[in-house]
Length: 103
Image 1 (spheres, one colour):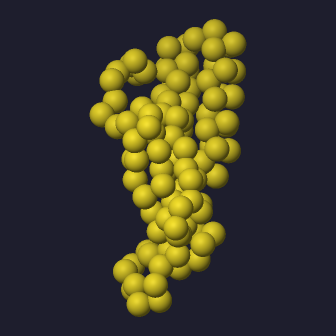
Image 2 (cartoon, helix red, strand yellow):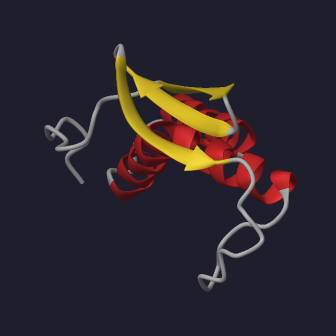
């Protein structure tokens, strides 16, 4: 797997802030997306978050996506290329750090 391929998404890292009931996901000084923290009780869309904890978890996952993608790509490359043990360990560490950040 080529981990140096240019991506079409805004490069990471992404950060999140909460402003006026919305989670704003930022990347390189630009808004990547925004999510509602809470929804009006008349919003009956399937899967619409109704609890602030759900919205917070969604925002963490979205903000952690670039790191998760990079870590998974590095781990895949390390194992597919039969890289030295240190490279595999570093890739595994990156993956677990990305999972923690997105959780």
